[in-house]
Picture (cartoon, rainbow, N blue to C red):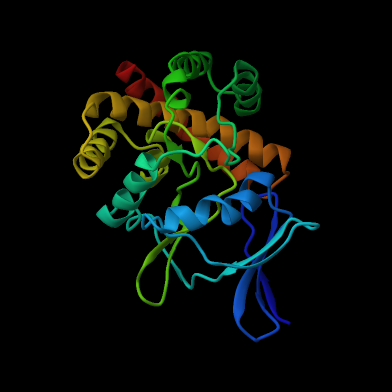
Length: 262
């Protein structure tokens, strides 16, 4: 049985294997309680609304193991911000949440912020600006709508038919659409990029409040820094230092140019 390790930032072991029938499938374990439940409860209902997720081939509850459809074609960062992706996310965001589903608890605590700032060792002015973003972050988490919670390009793929598929649902939860829109913008982005994607999404989703959404996208970008730094540090991922160095180089200028959005 051949296998290929596909794990990136996640805690689970993810491999591409050949199953007993010789078909290629993704085997992922141990998955979070959120993701295990997602494929059994939420995914079948979401697919009825054209929110496309990998088909569940089999599962083992004792190991919290999933075998999922293999999505063969990766998607690059430039393609992921297209209207097809925005349309699918809009359908997800307006799908009625079911209180019986299990959700990842999204939030940005002061303790998490300060822990990430200690690791980042930013200049004092930049650290204070990060705290300003944190002070405005409640807007991200009080929104009751569904989100994937991790919509970056690495979690999208295309089937042989060309159909877009979103996988990796361990952060499935509720919150502002901005949480799913922010990763579609390369790097930290800028005010023009936030306004542009907020405008396009609002037209597709038939929503108002473009300016508020653009601001929330900027806040989400700042919050994701804390999430990524702490996750990579906690899980001792090999590219932790690479991310840390990138943030140290780019964050101060980004914060200076973006904090006025608040």
